[in-house]
Image (tube, rainbow, N blue to C red):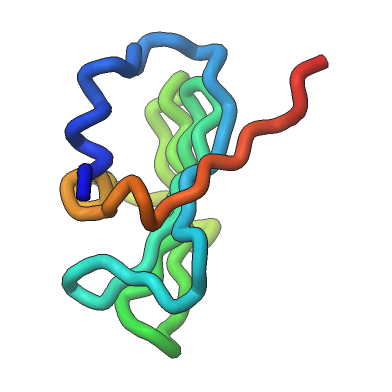
Length: 109
């Protein structure tokens, strides 16, 4: 199965027009370490929903690129939290199988 990271070379991360959410297609699917993630992107605004393991608290990372601001569970994050966010997003891209995901995009106007 293809991993998300294998498709990233076709994506222009400077394109601020992309809006969508990438999530697992089923509640039964998780990453190899047992965690679950969903990633919403709206240009430079990224929201990562992260659950370390089944039954654990959902952590919400809200990254506002233009403002260089990260909120973690609605609290301002620092450099440590920004590094955690980047590590989690990279883990998701490197380990999520494309066939296990759905992409949700808003309707075109």
